[in-house]
Image 1: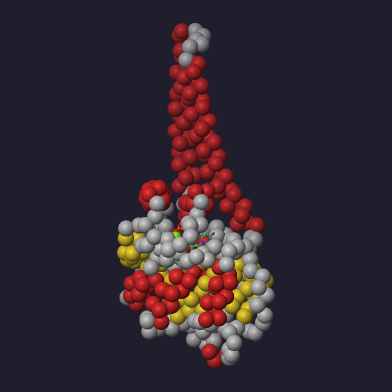
Image 2: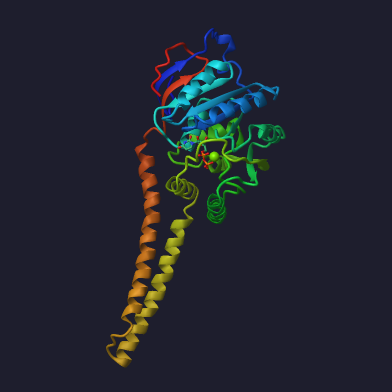
Length: 346
Ligand code: UDP
Ligand code: MG
């Protein structure tokens, strides 16, 4: 088994007693796939499974849970394997060989999912599984993309404010309309998932990319809980990087702003030079105002460096994109399929 985007190098495991008739892959795609990226979540996984599976069992529709381990180095891969052996008929586990980031892990999950509707969920129970029916109800009404807005967000204050600022900025510079871009608890129909898989973007922001393909999007308010256990996997640096991914993938307005600012400064500088030239002719040489000149020069150098930095963000992403390295490396897949050995290498 080999995928194009990801790079399949591991093995595929099937549950004991598996026959082709019970395959949830080729014969009958389930109605729902729930995809969960997992990165060092050993403390929260038992709580997650205890709440998630009863909700899904109660839906009265066929489903699969696709658990993607994003290169964890705690006990998470072992816990995922155990969960697979507990519910092999509805569980798929994809173990990535190295940490690829939440959005790449989600893409890996998309590749291994088959549901007509796909719901993405965080592992830390901040998105209550009990809200899954709320999202499904909107898909049933015919919407192809269901976004969510966190009611009473339960994160640290600085995260909340930073997120508001980034939402505001994204509204201004992109055509993506989302009330709460940071919430990954979303539902997509299969056409949108396929369009995402066809996109081949090496660094992207899944909810925004999905939005660009949505013909009929809607948003619903969902509850938000505090992280059930463990700590956030996003450092300040990772958050900044992610937001740059969002801004650069969906807009070139930052570059255009710099062109405009550059033009504005050029015009002002031109007038300033004429003014200084006239003064030189009328008053003669002057040495006063040296520090003012320094201040102006430093200000302009600051703008210049900022502009080069923004340009670098775009150029760096072009560089990553043209190298066309795999977005993620799959180590082991546990799913109903061909029989082989669990090489335990992921
Ligand atoms: N995650 C991941 N890879 C990463 C970082 C995070 O798969 O490199 C997963 C993480 O295990 C969780 C989800 O992405 O299921 C959201 O992460 P987290 O809760 O730490 O983010 P926050 O809620 O603080 O934004
Ligand atoms: Mg979280």
